Length: 430
Image (cartoon, rainbow, N blue to C red; front, side, top):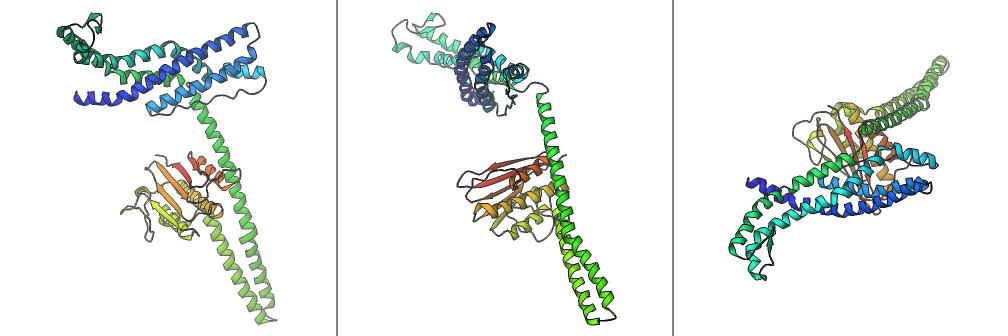
């Protein structure tokens, strides 16, 4: 019982803050809806029709404010995507009526304007009333007779003051329920202001369709790059080897020394072709990933960086091979992540380090790997000039495409003056 009372008391300030904010927004909603009703009234005679979409647009900031307040109180984000009201008047009106987010906003604001303010005032008054009832015996003697009133009973004696304390106990018990009432109100607001049923799924399908198309484009570009590298590099060198060996065979009888020299050139060309083939293979899937794991592969990247780089590896991605030196790793090997996730993380880090080397002017880089088994988190930060921006075709856009192709996401923080932090979250499946 004592623990429950303690929890309720600790939650009381936040609940009162949320309710008091609702008093203000409820009044604002009342006046906003009166203005919206006036516009609708004018639209009946045709005058206000062009203003209706703009009036809806003006109601959105108030609905967004309610979402932010409710999300902050509940600790859960409430995200709603509005359909853009573009085009001519007919198109804007059609979008306005078809968008479920508009209808839910207006419905919530109507309820909030009618019931939000009075309910919030009642709930806020409960703790104040309970406190007043309990402290009446401490101050009733200091005031003129008949001044203190206790639910219609004038407090003019110690007996009536004691009765006020008895009345204060149930009021205090009810006041302890204020956090629960506030949460119920917030849950109702979330239900009304949240996305309509099916909207989240439709948005998710559209998002996955878009990322799948981007992944296919990136895959196609990667195949073209590999084909170009093989055609212009290894393939050309192997063709040169064949020609050189053919010439060496023709010169064998006439000029032995020239034939041997041609064979040596063919051998050198074959060695160079093999090196280029290895480079191409590394760009597809670095062998060190398969042999020694992600931490060791990233450790090699950090070691090759021209800017000093600190690698911080959490236990969930600790190296499973010898030779890697990291800032924070477990003594026993960690479970390997899916190959596609490890490859994506490797190339994300490689691209981020390359970007930082080219553009940041940093003196220090840091790479952090971690996250629970179901999510691999990669963070690359530098102490450079900051102001990094994502542009189409740039390295950061490529990092985002790699992340989104695996249903992940990229977050970029790069204020002017630095630091720049690139955070990538890659789901690992089940």
